[in-house]
Length: 96
Length: 487
Image 1 (cartoon, rainbow over the protein chains, first blue to last red):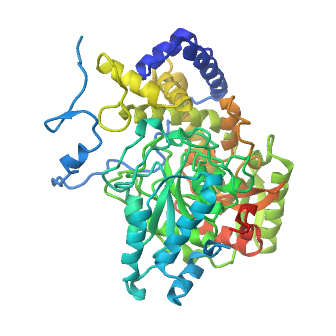
Image 2 (cartoon, each protein chain N blue to C red):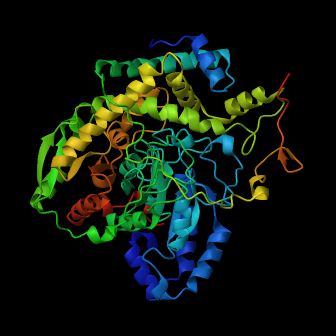
């Protein structure tokens, strides 16, 4: 599994929403292959019955009172939006 | 010689005795930037007008209402959002982005009366160990301009080392505060995960990221950490624990302290000068009444692979928000929404960021999830248990911060794996979540070396006490790079 094919890299790039050229796919296949090969060393370890760690602190369900508070100002939120119309964010066509 | 050759305490004394004003201190920072940044290239954006305006306002506050950092200048890493001051994460994808709120730490700096001078360069999205991954400029190491300052908070360390600002904030996901602090001969602390709010820190790997202070002395570092720490309703992973007066821990007394020295931290790849600097440091600690023993953190060798899988997986999710729709760069001449995403991200991200997004996406994919992502999470448990075991018997863990001093610009850019190896001694700490500091402990060929002191969860006080005791008996922290001469 360590080696990545060009096709696999193109598939991953698609999943990650990255446009990729043939040359890039070739380069990344080599580099990512080297990294995943390096990562294969984890297989040496027996992790049967070892709980995965997602988070180091013993925190569970941090909740707040269910009281509405003011969010960010709408006009401010639109300040960095490149294309907008009537206070709404504009995107290119979604369907063909 | 600059005013910034002084500690916070000394600067406050100057202000108190009316020898300098807060406006003078602010101007000094911009003068230093003017004189030195052409060579060091640390700053991406300057906050001059607003900073001077703030300085004038702060002059009016009575002395008795001022804290220890009041009126002092600081630089902020460019992945920490600052309202109205461009924040790019050194990425093209955020070019021109003007945040609409301040990060919690920035708000806290303001409350402490500190003055933000500008935004500091970094590796794009904090992914890198040399600052060479910035889309804008390559920051230089002030000790030798043909060398890297380290990364990813390379410019945060370089700006302090060059005396452009006496304080800066960095962020540390796998060593990004400590490794550049080591390379640049300054003090850098990665606090316990959860000690400092991450609200407004542009997320790279949320379970590992932590903001921390970079300074020239341990005492200044302790003061700045106290100012930025604390639970925050806007960050549910910030810890609701008491924030101690860290500076009060600096007693100089480490009698009876138990030090652990992991044999894995002095093994293969560690330079002879680095090894010697650690042995010398242990003699200093012994002379002060501490004892040390060799221990083992047996899973250390797996930390690098574990880290790259976990941090990249988290990054692939976190960085999905950069899509060209709501902020930052947006690709032109696209057909539809999918193309807009793909082209914006392809044109906006640099190669290292793309590599890590793809590695993360791959690790999280059906078919590889168990073998990569879940496996790495399990190994993370084993690494954390190594630390728990050692820290049950010892007060601190001591070793080098980096295996070698700063390398030459361009030396490691072709091979990602060699570049990653620079973080081999700092990464385990992030996986475990414990705090660790890097302080200057020697030189190799005129380049600074760093001593790493790791402590137990939320026990930054002991780390500071040990670091301060060491600093009192050595003078490495008093040395300044040649670039200071005549400037």
